[in-house]
Image (cartoon, rainbow, N blue to C red; front, side):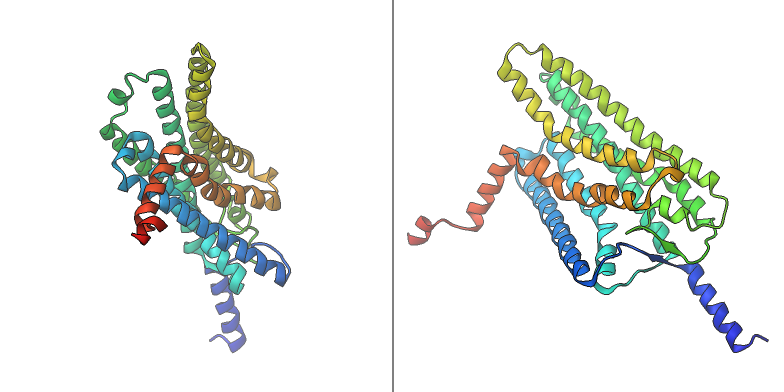
Length: 325
């Protein structure tokens, strides 16, 4: 029979083997409170901004065209993408609750990479949509119909959730060693692998191959689309026409640069060369700032969407003259 000390030791080992500790950020108490308020504010801004876009697009029939269907899908995705990491980060900052179960950690990783994969697919599809709109404007409605748009969106979401199933299954087969501390603010693959006792070469190779295929594959499609767009714009005779055509792509190009730049830095390189602290900063840019900025970059600065918001505001908040009557 086990002695009391041996039982306690066994229990501790069992707890440690089924739970991880997310280190997060090492901050002073008053700084941690300020950072909590900052991330809470960013999270709420992202939720409100993206929900506003979805509501505006679905309420106004003038926006029921493929381009805005893609944007509403991206806004919906951003809500879930930022929610895959920030709520746990807020819990860590507010209550210092850094514990996460092994299954919960791996599932967080799965949803993070799957939702990120969907975003890459959507960005690639949206670049093709802009290419067709600029290079073949007269045939745009015939090529990108609402039905085609819906099928493309469905395919992007389904493939996004399928892509990283195999790497996730491989991670469930890994063994982990103490102190079970993940040096990140969420369960990122590079940080989780570092605390594994198993030979992770197969997982590293498979994950890197899948990540590189998704990121570089969608990036190449986006790059080809933009090269064709640039060639078409240069062929437009008037300067005004060139500026108008180019302005329709600037928002998408800004987001593409932000998302692909951070993702390539984190995932398309050897795990051994990664710096944990630098990865945290770049991951914040990708997982937090992008969902916050997307509503402003894409649609809240779009004149047609702004007009819809003004009309909705007038309906909800009557002006002074109508109240006096």
